[in-house]
Length: 324
Image (cartoon, rainbow, N blue to C red; front, side, top):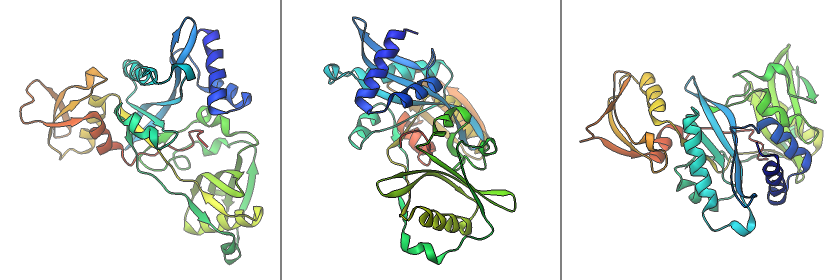
């Protein structure tokens, strides 16, 4: 890797995203490698760049290779020339060759959702913020819970029970969550009779307690712990929702093979179209849990790659992606 280009990228990241040096160094230490750094340069000057971070995705029990695109930027004087979109196209083709099945990103604002949609990404179902107000705190009492604040995420958390929204979600490991082990984020667990019933990652900002991620064993536990948080910090508690999460299928054939194996009663004749990844432009016949590539696409249902992604991954959940 070109160390000068990496240094330039870090400086642009700091200028554009306003992150501090400590965070940037930690983030790059976790995710930078020879296969993750994509950029366009001119006269040895970085013009546009991004990181493709290596994650995993749970798709109905099967584990996919999932690429999360972050730090997408273009140097100010080079904007408006289509560099970022061309860089994303180049990245999508590259990660397809490297065996990734699915790709995701988070649009920084609503205006970028349409921009990424032109590249085949779909906007996932959103979860709204929810507020637990101070006036409710005294109506619920903590009992039988042992609550601890920790300085790092405990090893026992790294299993599907605590770090999984559903069967269509990103999977985390120690590497992808390492950056949450610092003073900015507060980590809590609550145990009842020696069993962890709550796991929380929290920030204190804007005069509220913001829950970035929560696992609650049941509604009783949820209400008790939220009440305890209100009492502890004497402020409203907000469970932070998810906005502008976007996904795109990278390997349509592999995804459809998995879909067919789980829906063996389905019979589908489908032609996939993809303007960027040429290998996805195929016709498939799905029946009895199997998939066959077909040369004749007469009578096949035509479905674009974004329509297929929307069909299978609209409910997909990306959480704890260091966007908060």
